[in-house]
Length: 317
Image 1 (spheres, rainbow, N blue to C red):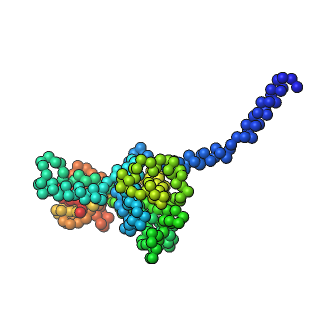
Image 2 (image 1 turned 45 degrees about the horizontal axis):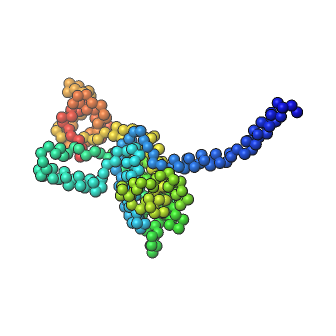
Image 3 (image 1 turned 135 degrees about the horizontal axis):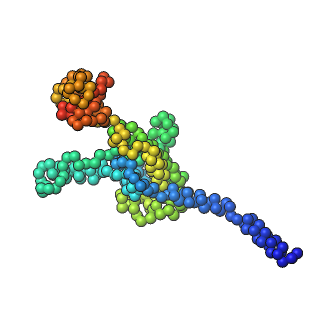
């Protein structure tokens, strides 16, 4: 065998060795680790999907586990993700109302600029809760939100959390304020085995949960499992929102109006047009969204459509 052939054989043998030793399964495991690590990170949004208020569920199940309210936990996710404008409908709102009461009574200094028409409307209301193990309750696979504690069982609840197995099954329900439709229902499930990559992802570092009022979720085992379950549900919730209309106000029906003075509905935006029908004070009308100066196109409850001067009606209360 000449020197050139010897080198070729050596290279081929080396290449075969490399192929045989290539750690294929290890690369797959790394990809899996990368995916689970991403699932442990709070999502970031380039745009906001609207204003959202986070409220507590009816039953305070978290007290049994010495945890803060899950509403406080979700508020941390909302703030850090930048996916929504967070509006306060809790203690902060109560304090603001007290300040507004001082303004309306004339107690505040002049130029304080506090009054009506300044509060930002919530487009959505989000309720974080546990998933019940009663599959028949509620009529769907999510079951019903947690309704009661198991009688005679200390620290146990009727679904959602299993202390022995260290598992948590949670649900985030989002309701459209204008239509009252439940637009999103996102579930999350996590176990004790998920804590390794959750902590590795930095989710529980920095004490951000406790600072936001969500105490116990970053320094207790069951709290961390619940936090990861809610994060999984929040990621799914944000994904579902990416498929909804950008402007919740524009996507909903227009607010109805009530006639405050007698008038007429015209076939066009002019009092010279033909009359569709007379209108009495107190009649409810539904704007279509079309406007021409002071003239609004509306429909009545009988299906008649026409134009009415906005001077004659007011927004229904």
